[in-house]
Length: 125
Image 1 (cartoon, rainbow, N blue to C red):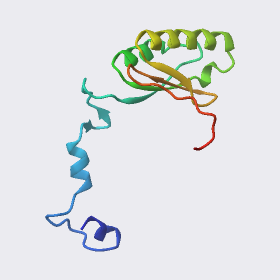
Image 2 (image 1 turned 120 degrees about the vertical axis):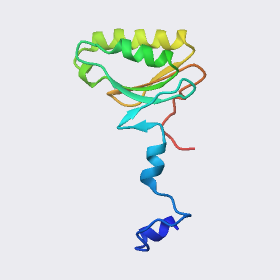
Image 3 (image 1 turned 60 degrees about the horizontal axis):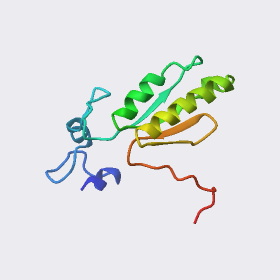
Image 4 (image 1 turned 45 degrees about the vertical axis):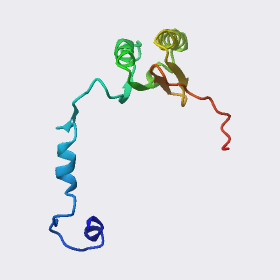
């Protein structure tokens, strides 16, 4: 079994065991690059630079129905620019029937059509 290897068992994979390296090689990840499929929703981490460049990439990923975790740390000292970019992204998300929310001081979550972000009070239910 696979767990036998973790317990110090056989080093050779038997017929019923999974060779994780072969399994991962058969997935849609090749040489560290993702082979995208149009019918799959991806979660992507993107960043904006100090001038706010990168908004176009965010919009493109949102239009592809992907979820974006956006790092806005470089804009933390440019409150006016950050406010304008968040408004632009919020309007785009609403136009595409998506949603936007803040998940930390430096990260925003932007979701595509058919998804909503539930703002919680921080209490576990």
